[in-house]
Image 1 (cartoon, rainbow, N blue to C red):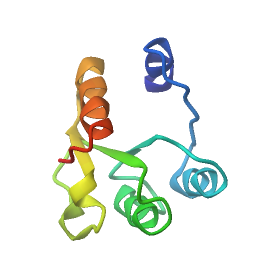
Image 2 (image 1 turned 180 degrees about the vertical axis):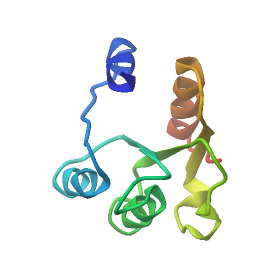
Image 3 (image 1 turned 90 degrees about the vertical axis):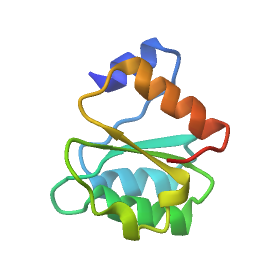
Image 4 (image 1 turned 90 degrees about the horizontal axis):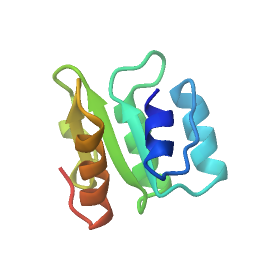
Length: 105
């Protein structure tokens, strides 16, 4: 649903069903931004952010969470924006715009 909403806002969207697939996609292709949930099975969003910090440091990162997050130890944090769930599409679009300008959390 989020992918369809972002496409209707003019974004080109690629989705992944899990974090390992997302990492594989990010390893193979360039993306302007990555949206990721913090709490996922197997590989957490913070682990994805750590991978991004090492391998794709220029990519904007927006983490989504409905709870408190342990992301403080993440090296990507200064460049990453955490958006709380539930959120409205305009809030996500504003977050992406801030990230594009170079602003983080």
